[in-house]
Length: 350
Image (tube, rainbow, N blue to C red; front, side, top):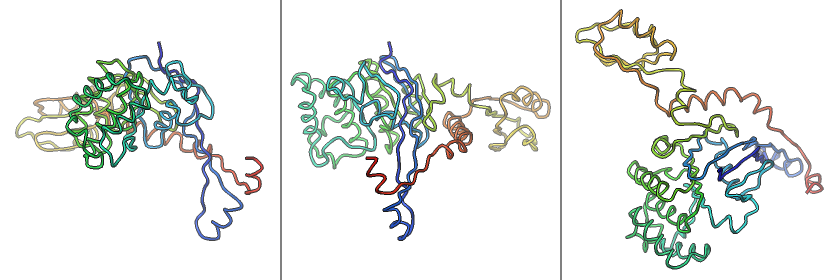
């Protein structure tokens, strides 16, 4: 059964375009210029209970806007959504007690107070029973390794420690759905790994539903079996991680180990040369040309070893984003509706 159901969800913003220069700014007081920004354009999405789903896309793709819609922070322009049977933007208390939203660039903890004080505030807000609060707090801080930091002011914690405290605060009331927006942004490799380990363990143990946005492909590869890619406010792909490479990658990486003493030249006729470090070379070859290219290379050179690999996931997704942006550049610029209105007209409409 789907715990998250989204149908035709859209969100458009009307943004005031402030002109440059003093006189232009003064004219803007009476004749305002607006641009309609289509952040989300008709998303359809189902997420089953207990799934860990990656929600990927370039900056400005609509990821965070979608999470805000599903958490009820903002209202949609059109479309519908249900999370655990609730309409998010109705903001029922029963719904708000069953989900959590963690944003890597936003703080929910009091900056000058120890984290335990913010946790106690959460206990009162969510009406968590004292015994449940102690049990959850002990479990989470133990798993995240921050129990000794509970009474230290949040401002004195490192970025990784603060994120661990943010996750603890979000999970104190045992939510059924967790929205994570860039939880490892700015963290070092060790902190990223620790949070990945915690999220994997907690999700498997509690079977909660998690929707994760991240620009770090290691987060996605370590945690998620299902990937949803959004670009220009629309879903471009929904499937497995391996399926991304199969569907969108047009090249293979061929690594060649030549025999000692072999003279290697003119490799560019076989594909794009990525690296040559005798006696090794790496080429980018079109996927459909790999068999023919390998046959030609083996007929021309003495080769000791060959490896054919898929390109890195980051590279494939970057190519996908670039292709989507190129394909939709003209329609998108035409689709941004510009309006000019007087202050009086704006007041009458309001």
